[in-house]
Length: 128
Image (tube, rainbow, N blue to C red):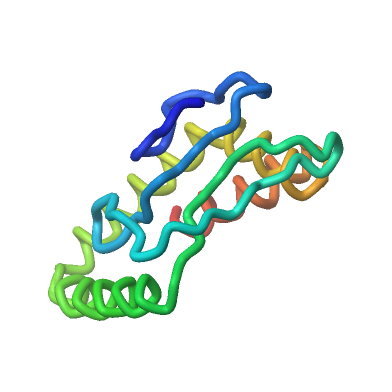
């Protein structure tokens, strides 16, 4: 079983669960404060397709603190640079749209075309 600390660059083999052992907080992958995990199940096969850390109240507090600090810095960035950042996020999401759509379709049982259009496509469009 592979353990990763960053997002994969490509879809993984469906029989090998995707394992995340860290939380993304404040722009970096950090150790969760607890040790419990949540299994992610393929809604059509009921096979485990991933495991993620189960966040704790302490993890939430850490994320809120980081978001608050990030907002303070972000609001000082000139609007042109913020627009460029959002456009770059949009492009990155669109580039990984097929991968995101496939993972969402497996997890929630949504038809692939809808998962690609809605779950992957709308966030890319919103940032754009």
